[in-house]
Structure formats: structure tokens, C-alpha cells
Length: 275
Image (cartoon, rainbow, N blue to C red):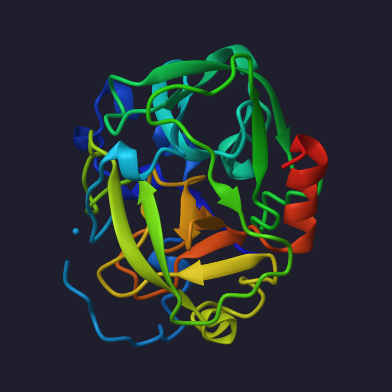
């Protein structure tokens, strides 16, 4: 069984202001103590800053959402239709009171601008397993249609589509740009490669990376705390949902995503949302 911890263990309390307290509870990363006996995959470092990213303009990421609890950022998400958003089940497990959940769209600034949409319904994958983070996907239905300036759905990759190692993909979110640190106000993006599935499995203890997962990162470029639930996109299609990885977010251990093309994930999304 994989053991996951709340990210607060690795972020100095002094760095977390009132607006940043909530996201700490809904992001899962793996502390070094649980895999330090495992020799990590060695890849050449890439210099750059998500970690290693740069400021992003919402015009280039009109599908990007901030999933908010009581008005504060907790996770990322993506627009997949006018009334449905996609995120990670670990961000909404156990199911919260929908009255506390909103989605900010149409702004690269996670604190202001854009539009706030109320959530009417949250559906976690029925077989999501919080002990090992398998089938880490949820969908959220909004009260109002998500339409407006710089708001547009992302196309989801069809079931069983395969992306070989080395395929470049773009990750976006408001997660940490360094550890320890605080959340950026402006949306970040980073270009990272998909990692061959066998190579990814070799980078973690046996059984941790399963077929419903996809890996992408490289040294110096990775998702981090606060990016959970956010989209990984290539060729204009979303292929992954930020799920878990190493707490140091350095990219030496593969970053792990829910694989949108995995049949049990893609069919769940289609059956619930029609997308």
C-alpha cells in the first residue's frame, strides 16, 4: 500500500497565509522517507522555474480553473463542457458540501478577475481508492454555464489513446514554484515530457504506478503542491490530471497523473457528463 501525506508537512507554516491554508489539505505528494531506499531514475536536469515554469496568459489556457473551497484555492481543474469541470478525486474526497465549492474561470490571477461559478454536483469515480490514489478523477457540474471571456472547454483524449515516452505536454496551475514556498498569484505553465510507463514504474516502488496512471516530468520541471487536479495537455487534448509525486517537486522521481485515456476513467467521464 502506498502511504500519502498532506503537503503541509513540507511547507513552512510561515509561508502559508490565510488564503493558502485550504489547498494544503487537498494535495497529495510522497515524502522522501517512503522511497529513499529506492534509487531514483537519473535524467539530465533541465534548467528553467509550477516548478520550472513561467507565467501564463489565460488566453492560452482558457480551460484552466481554480477549484475553490470557501473562496480559497484548493486544487486545479479544467473546463470540459459548458456545465462540467474535470479534477482529481483526492481533491473532493470525501465529498464536500457543494455550497462551499466554486470554480474561478477566465483569469490567470487566482485571487481576482474572471468569473466565479457555483457548483451544483460533484461526482467522484465510484472506484476511487484513497489509499493508493487509483482512479483519481472527479467531475463537477456547475449551476451556471461556464461561458465568457477566456473560458473554453479542453478536448479530452479518446479512450485507449497512447502517448509514447518523450511526447511533450504542457502543465498549468497555481502550485508551488519552489519547496518550501507559497502559491503564485499568476498561473504558471511548463513544458514537460511524457515518461515511458515502464520507466515510470521503475522510478517508484513496485505496485505504486498502475495502468490508470500516466507520468510526465523531468529534472527541474514538475507539478507541485497546489497543482492537484489540474490539466496536462498535448496537441490541444487533455491527457492527464495532476495526481501525486514527490514532495520536493524536483522532477527526479516521475510526476504521476490520472490517465484520461484509461478506459475506466474515460468511460466514467463520458457516462456522467456526456463529454
